[in-house]
Length: 209
Image (cartoon, rainbow, N blue to C red; front, side):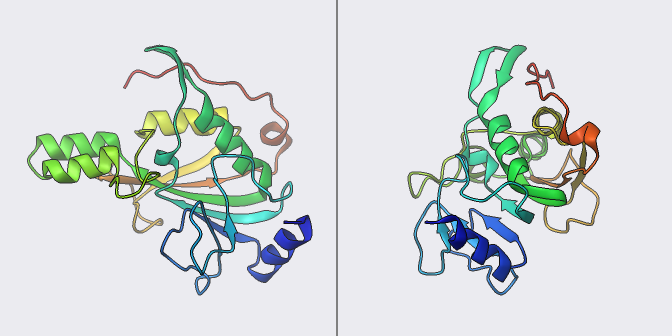
């Protein structure tokens, strides 16, 4: 598609884009629908873990619920001295298309909460498998990455983000309980300050949790 196609879509939906919507149609909520599968309501069919067709600083808001866990970390090395390369590259690409002061709303499984709740008997083994490995009912519905608060923070900082807040995954204005919540929400803002935009971005070493 020519660049004008994407520019027109963004104008129509006030530069708001939802990644990985699947069967959901978020037009009524004011988002461009993006997914790797082609449904009748889909506006853009792409892998959001690769290079995006949108221009630099063209998007004001990205909604990415249940997306990042499907993209491999691509670990290099062995714990605790390993690097998580692909997730960081993906977040840097999302950051590229985000306008200054634009935001990304992320929701992923919270591994600390999942395992604590399972060991406490408040989560079934079937639920554990779903949150850790994905549903598996189609090829791309498997989880290739896992996050707790420390890993997510490291990835976001390595991608150049300095402003982010962990939240309840269902009410993004509420507090996040990392010990009990099965999922985590993160609201990320792209700072317009030169210290954020122009800094040299490095890849973090692995983090012991």
